[in-house]
Image 1 (spheres, helix red, strand yellow):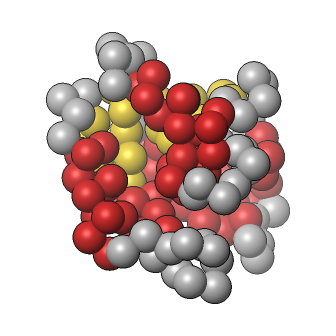
Image 2 (cartoon, one colour):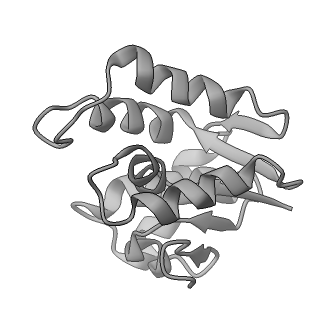
Length: 146
């Protein structure tokens, strides 16, 4: 089995000011012993780095070194892989985009969903309900037990 974790869960796990911090942190800590393959994209990781270090978003932003250290911690997990677009991405994206009516804020979610689909990853842990629009995704919110 394989799965992905969306940027928002990574951010909640790092943001001590968030009401979701403790649950997200516990969830992330439980991934260390998970035997399933964790598939991340550079979009997820760069989004984390961008937001976790942004003083207008995080009340106490992480330093670039702290945020990148967290990324490196994920990448060091033996079951972690960074995946990206494969050949034929544009066609798959166009088909799914037309079916779902992707526009505006749904574009990055569709981008991620198609990358995951191309790699056979059907499960994502996220607090973002927009992923439920993609019928090929199993969406689990670890913050509320979905």
